[in-house]
Length: 142
Image 1 (cartoon, one colour):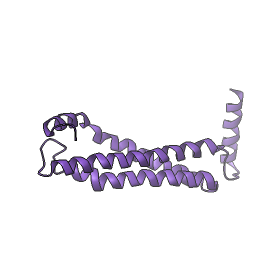
Image 2 (image 1 turned 90 degrees about the horizontal axis):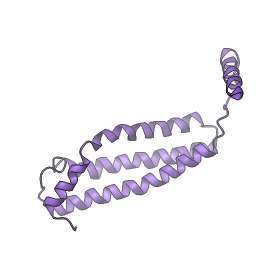
Image 3 (image 1 turned 90 degrees about the vertical axis):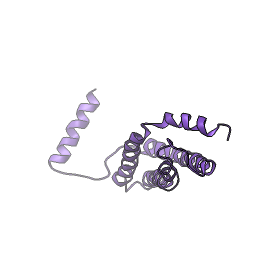
Image 4 (image 1 turned 60 degrees about the horizontal axis):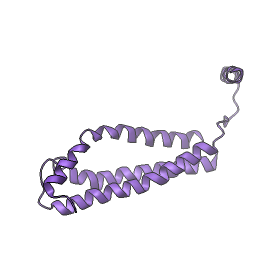
């Protein structure tokens, strides 16, 4: 590693507050799963959405097993651990692995959205169908 342990600890202070990004990660996973469920009859959209969901879920498993596992003993990188080099290596490689998995998730969900025509997957009747027709007519006038 190029940085000394003291310098590394200073750089790690940049990460303060990133725990709130977990909210964004959870929303991304849930919305990806929701797309797969909502478009279940469209096999390609469903498959791509599920692939993206699995990649994102795997990043969270990696975070829990390897990244967070190093955050705890170092008190979120405010104290030097006994095995500093190994901890840094595990922390950095876990972030790299998560980035590698996030890219195919992004590509898969992008393709799923691009391939989805947005048409309803079912025929409905009654008030629900009337509401859909009204909204459709309004949108077409714009």
